[in-house]
Structure formats: structure tokens, C-alpha cells
Image 1 (cartoon, rainbow, N blue to C red):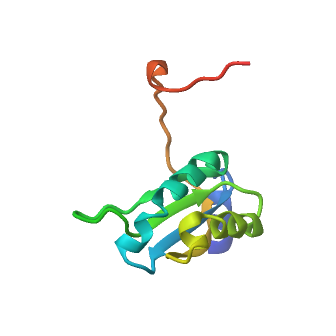
Image 2 (cartoon, one colour; image 1 turned 135 degrees about the vertical axis):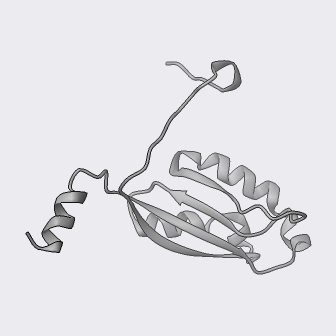
Length: 122
């Protein structure tokens, strides 16, 4: 068996789900960005169905810095459209870099406390 064949065999059972990862970086001062943060937060919540995970990289004493958003959309075009409409980027106070990421392994555990979440039953 060749190395390529062995690798193919080893990754065959992996989930191999493609997601889009946006790394965002400030291009303006924290003071300049701050006025757009409420709009940013509303936008992110309104599009949460397309966002797998998102949040800032935490740095002591810094309110707004670099961030990471993992998008679950159908295409790279859709990912770019979502990021370009994001208020901090749209207003030119942040820039982003988009990468395609293939999830292969890991583990997820979920615990839900129904008293602490909004649950809509239909």
C-alpha cells in the first residue's frame, strides 16, 4: 500500500465537512470601531443560522481586536457576501481573510439547560 493510499483509507471515515473560516483584523482605532459595535452585534445575531462559531481573540485591556468566524454557508461566494456585509468590514474599520477549512476529526459534547435558552416549538 502506498502512503497516498494509506492516507486515503485513514481519512475515508472522517466527516470531511467544509466550512469557511474568516479571520478579521482591525484597520482603525478601537475608538473608531466602537460606534459600529452595536450594529455588528445585531448583524451577527441576525445571521446566527449561517454562523457556526464566532468571537474575538481575547487580549487583556483590549475591547476590540482580532476575531474569528466559522461560517456554514454553501459556497465561498456566500461566505464572502456575508463577511462583506458585516458592519465593521462594511464601514472599513476591519478587514478579513477567508480560508476554506475541512473538518476531519474532533469531538463535540452538548449540554443544554432549558431554563437558560430560548426554545421555539412548533
